[in-house]
Length: 244
Image (tube, one colour):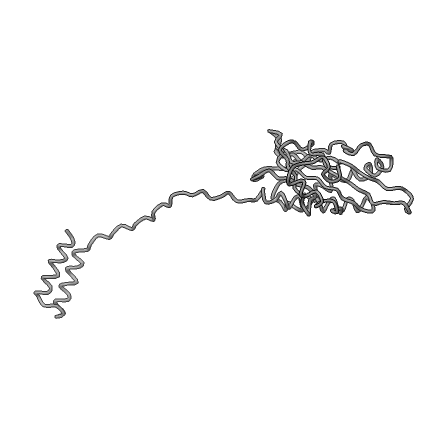
């Protein structure tokens, strides 16, 4: 997977977006003015809406848009390569996303209140002459959009390379798995516990004083000779006062 040019643009990206991102293969206008890309080791270029919340939502995979060819029309070998790889991209995307999300967000091609839109930004095929063969290159864009408002919630762009179509498909599937892992926390984050006044613990009611029981115990002590009559009378008075 190609990453050589990724960090060469990092300092410029931190200042602002540029039409030269990813050697001109990333067109920020497709994503909207609120998207500010940052470099990612796993995903090339990415942006997530601050405090992105995907809890209790579902993801619908929309049909891919036509190839953008952001660097201008390509030749026959490039068109041929795209025709071979394009049909497998939606299935690779779905499988990879599900692996990365691990059930955190339902994924469907028909239902969902969050829509994932994809397109090929550029593609470079290879000559038939193996002596002059170059690696195949696929650049692609993906954006996560709220189905109701049209607001962009997340955006991704990357360029991958490989010796053949199978390798491109494999790398793309792994890339989609990484994207699923990047989105999963937004779908599983716990709701912050709001601060509320703690309710005091109920205070157990004080049991009623058992005057009769106390008097019986005092009398028993007197009969056993453990207390004098004066001491018993003093205790009886104290018991009666406590029962008032």
